Image (cartoon, rainbow, N blue to C red):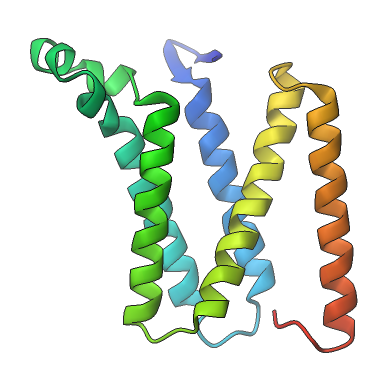
Amino acid sequence: MYNFQIGSMVVNGQLILFASFYLAGWLMLHYRLRGHQDKKMIVSLASNAFLLWLLIWKASYFLFHPQEVIAAPMSLLYFDGGEWGQWIASLVAIAYSGYAFRKQSLPALLWLDSGVWFSFAGWMVYQALLLMLGESPSIYALLLAGLGLAAWTWYGEKRQRGEAHG
């Protein structure tokens, strides 16, 4: 993955991609839940779930390489758990958000809707940035863009008929 240098500071490119994923998801929830009475709570839960995801993804390096971390604890700052760490972090973040929604007595359909749109917006931006960096195959990005456009159109039609909230 790419690293970017800003002055004397080197920034991990993957962290920038994940930050843009979060920002796109956050913006989507703000748009999607405008006028909803629980908007602040839902956006806060999504933010907490993402920060939990990020923490677990970075800390999962210790789970997979404990000897290296014990020998050099600073390696946690530079390395992450890779794809396996992303999957573990995703499962934990989904479980956390489901638990938090249930604890706040929010409907399961709202939890599913918010999670899908947060993930969808983030994934689209993530893939677009990968395409710009030359990391993603073009056909894959185009298929995802087409899927995104179809979902957006479908949602717009449902909303005009009054069958969708947000």
